[in-house]
Length: 325
Image 1 (spheres, rainbow, N blue to C red):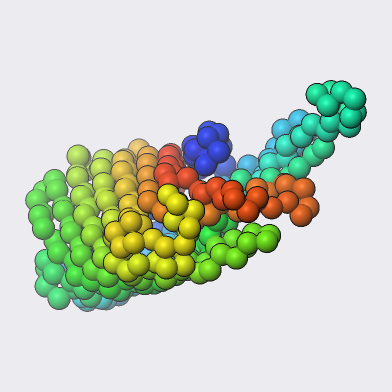
Image 2: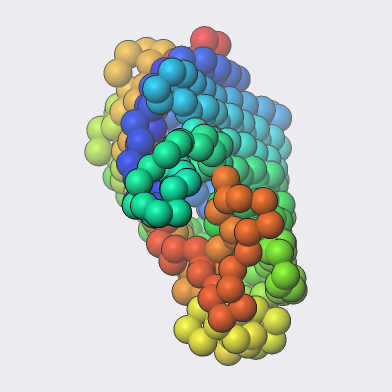
């Protein structure tokens, strides 16, 4: 079972229940490790090659007066051998709704509704593929390299991707606490959803990356995780549209992006665990918002008007994970 609560950019809140979770973890008992996902790794003594894999998914469909289709699928896999670890993960989500719009067909009475039109509106359309390699030099020091490709059309990004390299340090490790910090370099490439009568150039961003993550063991069955990642653009983005002025050009340190995550996991039974996760994403200079799905054919923004995606996105999740093997 997968329970998800999310707040969309249009201010709506949805609650969905989905059955269809598949979980496979080859090396240890159940622990809802995938919500939320954190961009750091810790060294563990591994004497043999160790594989782990897990997948989850859900779908919600309604018909009749309320017509919606929502689905999500995610998977992660990792391989560890000695001081090397490779992690791959991916996710895809899609959702649409049918809404009714009024038709004012009487010119003599422009406020009188004479008919209703149906419009199919996309509310979610995103995918992500990511890989990360960690090389542990000592117990406390490691290097990392990662790459990803993704898209989020509702946020105005038809494609965004890039890579990261850097240094990771285990700052503190006790029976209850594990604290990891990372510094590095991030390159991002963003291509925006095309708009009628308007040219939006792709943007390349070179950024400094700072990360800190904490794993708190509350008991043998319950753990708390928290992390924050910040990217500070180092270059002037000459082709990016400035959210403040509506004109091309974003100065260094004016396109800061932050991802913060908090999660609680607990084992209910031997093979059943539950996790709660909250993710907050902040983009100081978000992408131009595309023409809304369901608009009449040929619709476009006025030459003097360009809306932008929201600066803040949040996601709240509650997930049950049952491990079969």
